[in-house]
Amino acid sequence: MSRRAQVYPFTAIVGQERMKRALILNAVDMRIGGVLIRGERGTGKSTAARALAALLPEEDVIAGSPFNDDPTRPDTWSDYARERYSDGGDIPTERRRTRFIDLPVSATEDRVVGTLDIEKAIQRGERHFDPGVLAAANRGILYVDEVNLLDDHVVDLLLDSAAMGVNVVEREGISFSHPARFILIGTMNPEEGDLRPQLLDRFALSTEVRGITDAHERMEILERHIAFETDPLAFREAWQPHEDELRERIQQARLIVDEVGYTRADLRLIAMMTSGMQIDGHRADLVILKAARAHAAFAGRRQLSRADIAAAIELAIPHRLKRGPFADAQADLQNIDQQLSEYENMLDEEGDQPVEAEGVDSEATDGKKKAVR
Image (cartoon, rainbow, N blue to C red; front, side):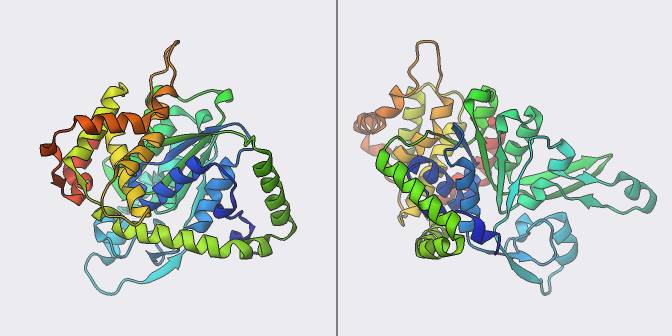
C-alpha cells in the first residue's frame, strides 16, 4: 500500500470549514505565508495537513535537485541549479509529488536551514552545502506540530523563509542560497501555552478548531473513520472523484491568481477595516489582500468582491486582535459583513479605480514586506 493511500482524504473531513478554507487558500498561493491552527487534541488538525499534501498535484522539478527547483522559473533557482544549467541547454526534469515535511519540536537551527562545510571550502576551495528542512520543503508543505513548544528562534527562521521565499546561509564569507517557498502549517493546543504576540502576527492566517457538537456530524465522523480504517484503499477510491475535483480547482486557481484585479476602493476598504479594529502594523493588510485574491481565484473569478475580503478578514484577523481584560475578541469578527457594508457606503466613487493585478506581488511590495518585518 502506498503512503498516499494511507492518508485520509481531505474532502472526507467533516466540518471545520474555516480550517479547510485557510489551507486551500495557502495551496492556491503559497506567498500568503502559512496558517496557524489552534485547537484541542483530536480535532483533525494533523489529519487535514497531511490530507492537503496528498491532495495537491505533482510538480515538475529539475532532476536530481535536492531543492525541488522549478525548471520553468530560473529566477528562483538555487545556487545548485544555477551552477549547472544557467548557461542554457537541456534541463533534465522529473515529476515529484508534493512533499510533506514534518518538523520535530527538537529541531535545531542547522537542521532547519542547512549547513556549509567550511573545512572543504578552506582546504579544497569547494563550496559544499548540506541541505536542511527548508530545502526539502520547498514547493511543498512544512508541518510543525506543537509549534508553541518550538524554540522561538527556529520559529522566526521558518516564518522568515515562508514570507521571503528564499533561504540564504552564510558562514565565514561563504554563502549559499536556495528557494524556500512552502506552505507553513503550524498546529498547537492553547492549553499548553501560547506563542508570543510577535510570532503570532508573523503567521499570515489563523483558525481555531473545536470538537464538533452536532450529533449527526459526530456520527458521520465515526462512520467515515471506521470505513477508512477497515479498507483505506476502497475508502480513498470512493472519495477520489471529490479529491480530483478539488485538486483541479486549486490548479486552475493557481493559474489565474495573479490576474485577479482589485480597485482602490478595495484597498481602502481593507485599510479601513484593519484601522477600525486597531490592528498594529501593516502585515495584516497585505495578508488580507493576498488571501482575498486567492479566494476569488478559487471561485474562478478574476475580480475581487466584498465576499472575498470578508473571507480573508475572518482568517487574517483573529490572532491579531487586541485581547485586553475586558475585550471581546470575537465581537468584531461577528459583524464583518455589516462593518464592510458601512465602510463601503462611506467610500467616494472616485476611489473606485482599478489597480494593476500584479501590483501586490511587485518588488515594491516585497520591499514593503521587508520593511514591515
